[in-house]
Image (cartoon, rainbow, N blue to C red; front, side, top):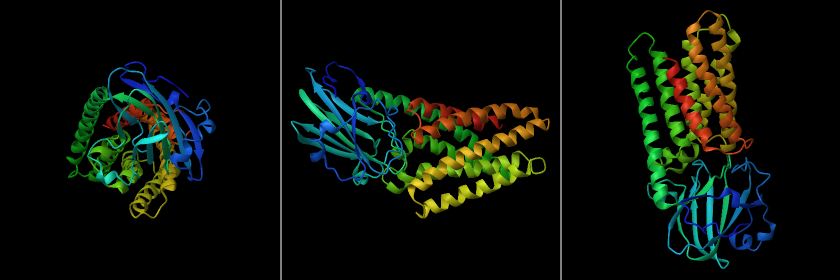
Length: 361
């Protein structure tokens, strides 16, 4: 429990060190009940930073604030994981709820929200003590990086991130246009697969950064919920189509060649099942992680076989794929709740995906 977190005029405050948690595995507790159970909350010293893992129940988080600033300031409560299922935020003053907001792709109010980042909550605090209760649930990974940011600072941070994402998307669009320009050649299947992989990866990393939910399907909860799985599995299918045609190891490594064929087909089938709403969210989440990790190893094997067949020019591609594999393993471990949350992992993965796509040229 903390006090005076707002005692100085900071522009951004990491809230995780001030969080205490209460497990609600049966999802039965109300905010009015939980506020009376403050003695049952525990600290987060044995929990990886901002990573509550994969849970089927709900988790309540409690933060105490003591505003000692002599001037009013507009704050934004930001959740740094755009794929969070549902967060219900309750602000208490003297044990009375003064504000309630819910955000996330499962939010019932998402259709009524303006086209803006759907995990930002504007807040203001008068002088004195306040308490924040946050109830979080998710069918997938429960990553909860949170910070209070002064509204002007939040706008600056978001503008800077938009410029970076715009530059990344521009490069990926250039690769897509280049590949589509070769559709009329004899190797059109290979280039079409590359374009599909580049488009899927661009939209996937865009989704991880929260930009897709902000600009593309902010008012479509089904897409907001399932887009990440559909996109990474689509990337997997298209990229394996490309690798299969670019690395012809059918004779030298028939097992790897056949395995790529089966993983590719499985990826596209799972995408179809997700779009038809015939597969549970958590199953899709685990399948996407599992297939992605397995395929990375298989492609490394194919590249190694090709290099040993005197294709020395593939060393650069091999290095790019190794970098992409390492960052993908880090991302998967974070999604599974095995390591602490870090925004750098998203950034490294995005950089690695760009290097991997460029290395094939």
